[in-house]
Structure formats: structure tokens, C-alpha cells
Length: 280
Image (cartoon, rainbow, N blue to C red; front, side):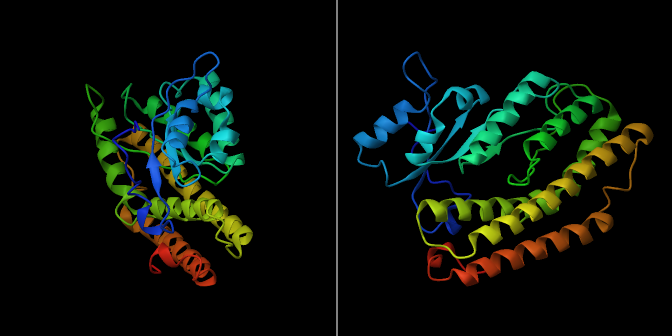
């Protein structure tokens, strides 16, 4: 069976997803009379895996709009990676992305994406356009905000490069090892996979609401940090908003809340989530 990198387990979630077999699979593009994902479902069925594994794949907003994603979910799709190429600065493409994300989340499918704030046109206006995309994608609080700040390829303003370097360090509480964003993503994955495995989890509705509120708080603080610090740096060539002494108290509180929330959920579902690993 073809996969993105062979048949692989999603290492990011392995330790907390109840022993489920998770595959990353490549779906061929849709063709007339052959909807998106048809090839994967047929191969899973042929190998006797259909109904016994959960799988993820990459897709475009067009795939989501035209594809039978309800059927794909029922056949094991639990996570979709949305392609955001060319979306920043294009209102039509952004609308298509938002509609695709909303559809996937209504179906109970997790959403991932990649967004480098400094790729493409290296300017502060480009950063603002990408932040606008990020804000729309994570607006409902069911998807953690995430981005990268890779070194800029090509000529750019020294102020922009300086800002990128400062920002990359400042967001470590979210994106570093054991960071808040990874914890939030794992918590959402626990809910989705637990429901797919029909583990009979208790308190899921209340846990989902609390997790959504916490994700929204984290997303809002992160996006506002980027927005305001970029504005200051563009105007003055410096900002104190990225200083760790200003960021750490807030992110520490968010992380403590996340730990308490997950520990409470695991304590209430200890038997069902025995394979989910120890409490934090």
C-alpha cells in the first residue's frame, strides 16, 4: 500500500491513543467517476484492514468540497492535512479553506496544516496576510494555532529578519518540546480516537467544551502576540512584547490548566484509557 513515507505510525500521537493502529496514507487525486480517497478505501479492503485501522491523509480544499468525506470518515479517516499553498492574500482561496475546515470538523475529523510566516514574500505585510489565514482556520477553538518561523530565503529587511529570530524564540512555550500546542493537539486526538474506538468515555461533552475554550484562549494569545509584536517591530525595529518575562506567566497558566484538564479526564476514564499513558 502506498503511503506518504511507507506505512508509518503517527509518532506524534502514538503514546496517547489507546493502542490504535494509525496510518498515514496517500490518496490519489480525484478523477471523473473516481472520488477522492477511493483508491485508499479499496486497498484497505483488499488487505483486510478496512475497519481495523485509523488513517490520515493530505488534501486540498477542493478535495474536501468534492469528495465523499463522510464515507471516508466511516472508513477510518480521522485526520486531514489541509494544503494552505497560495492562500495568504487570496480571499477566495481563504474562503474555500475555511469552508473545508468547517466541514471536516463537523464530521469529527481532525485538521492539521503547515504555515511558515516568513516563506514566500519576505515582508511584514506577508506576515500579516499569513496571520489572517491562521486566525480564520482556528477561529472556533477546535484546532490549535501553529506556525513555523524558518530562516528567510532571500533578501529581506534586517528588521524583518531580526523579528523572525526573536519570534522563533518567543513562541517556544507553544511549539517547543512539551509545549502547549502539542498538548492541545494530543488532547483533541484522544477525544476523536477514543470515540472512534467506542471506548465508552465518560464526561466527553464537558471535556470537549473545556478543551475548546482553552484552545481558543491559547490561539488568541498567540495570534495577538504575533500581530502586536510585528506591528511594533515594523515601526520601531524593536519590541518588548516578545520578552519571556512577559510571555511566560500567561503560557505557564495555560499549560497548568491543560495539564489539570487532561489529568481530570484521564482519571475519570482510567480503565478505558489504560493504553493512553501515565498522567502528566
